[in-house]
Length: 299
Ligand code: GUN
Image 1 (tube, rainbow, N blue to C red):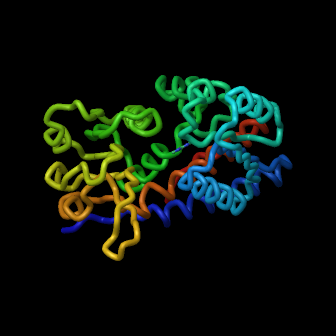
Image 2: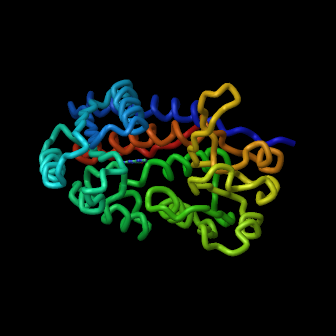
């Protein structure tokens, strides 16, 4: 039987609606409107599209977007000065610096300059450490792995004892995803470009998260029958009509014959990422107002 297709678009819309309701509640209770500062350096077209979409969805959820678009030649010192101002601004609850940054700016230094209490991307070493030590209630968790975890829990319920494999070891997705799954009591393998017999490792996994950044790197024959497959890949390819289209890191048509459930690309993990950014921003506003933050879940 073909796999159940997990609808990320619908789940993300539901999460955004939930965030919108909680934002209204916070405003009624404490008079606070969450503010999200998004900083873009340079004019990478994909980043510009992404940042626009963040701002629109923030506004729809009752979060005030505060956009800073800086020229590509902005100095590291000027960027650090802007972040210092945003750290001190009480109207700003979340700060996101769009990556990648131009090569003359050290991304690590910039990330460490963001207040950990406003780091809604969850990239600051303090937040990385809180997640790694199982204190994620106090942390900000990176948005893409957080969205993947929500989809997994809504599909599978309790994840304890399941075998999970994360293919990819990036700081943005692979490593935090593995930490989240360990915290859910999964038995976790992290596979990467140097892993031997990667297909054999994958065939043991009840949960497979593909975050490789390579088109169709994970084949259908690698998948355990009935497994839940989460595809984080966003690869732009030429479609039959000459226009470009998006495709994932998993060979979807093959995998959908074997998996129990699978996320499509587009319409899977992608929309969840921005919805989780809005949830993290709302969480920050609740924490700053000393009001217990909601627990975000999907239906
Ligand atoms: N570039 C690609 N993904 C992300 C993300 O989740 N956050 C930021 N800040 N930049 C990105």
